[in-house]
Length: 238
Image 1 (cartoon, rainbow, N blue to C red):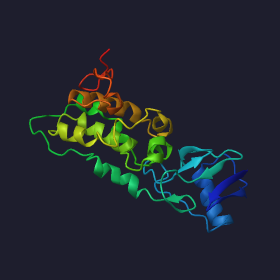
Image 2 (tube, rainbow, N blue to C red):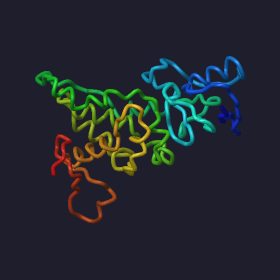
Image 3 (cartoon, rainbow, N blue to C red):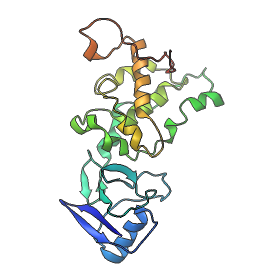
Image 4 (cartoon, rainbow, N blue to C red):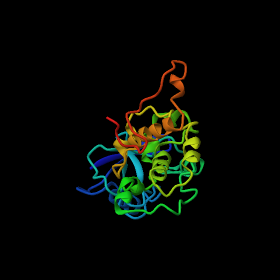
């Protein structure tokens, strides 16, 4: 089976006698048996740690779960600095969580979580910070200050948690380079290995923002309100 791997400026072709294997298994074989200089990241091998994110045929995948196909072209994630071969630095992407204040700032001691409450943001809790969404994001590609998909998903997780006592602080924080900068293209959702829709979360954050008097600045000169189609709690209002 022939595959090509991006190394520095060129794709290098490897012909490996393996079938029905994951990309990570093939990378391990190439490094141990063919080319020991190949660099890539891996960790849990169970689609949990998110460290083996790469692009195959221009789509983001986890190497530990993707089954290799003849002619595949593998390259590092986009929109992040490449350290070497398939190894990238995710530091700047991770910093967006801090800039977005994507955590509970102050607990409402009177609010008690029920099992039903936990299910509201259960999916968002599955984010593994693989940065596939940042690699696929066309906004982050041109604006590195954009808070980006997984940071905004985490903000929605906090905002939808009734134990958070500082909702306005969270909403204020995501107005600049945040919810209104997203194009809602849905590329982040398509590539998320956990099935998280950051697009949907951002739409719900826009609805929350409107409740605090914010609106899309692109519509500011037209007058009238912004109707996102969602109620205050992020549920559809139609």
